[in-house]
Image (cartoon, rainbow, N blue to C red; front, side, top):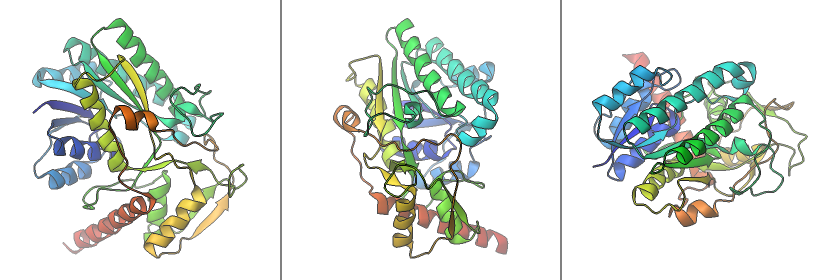
Length: 346
């Protein structure tokens, strides 16, 4: 089995991707310093795949500690790099923290890849690099806009770093995956999104429905959209996870035509915030307590993907629709409540 290093493996998308990699025959190790990730995810992944997955509690900004992982694992053939700070509001308040963490960790990881000849690298990028696109759906050739947040700027900078790295190091392959809004949970309800104070919309919805939050707020009702709320492209986390496996297979099998390629990962459908709330209420039977509020700094008006390139080149397909996204997210939230109740009885 080929060994893959997943950074941020105790995070939401990282954990689900580890499951998909293992189900497709890869061996996986993880690096996660647990500053944002959780051992709860690592334990859940072990239950899903039937065996533990080794996690190194290492801060990637520490080059020496990062190098030690590669020394201990000389058989790594590919890297998927998720580990990064990702809160838009937090990045607006603390831009230097985001530049220091997100850029330094990437540079250190690429240096280790070069020194250890790990020639297959997948970089976790974001649709935020498009800003407010001039044309929708947005494709990979679209001009990148001025970033709406320092977080988005770190993704643009990260992509440029990867491109320059490939130019200077022939034989290395980097795949840039710009994903839109991952939601949902594994169908087993053993792993899902873990956020005590969520900023992403779906866990805000599910936590409000189950009573963890007394109410939720819709940020902005005066956008030029169907109902005045923001438009986003929601895609199930397991579809996103599978695209990372496909991206690694793409370069490992030598099917890539360029050393550094970029792909959109989205459903291709734009859904407003209010439409998503309605979809959740339909699938769960719960009525959400929400209020309408002003716009939030850093938010773009509307963005959704043209995903034709990923479908064609990566042989990737979308398996989960919007109702399945909301159903798995809701069952995960209910599983968490049950787990908490059982823990309190012990």
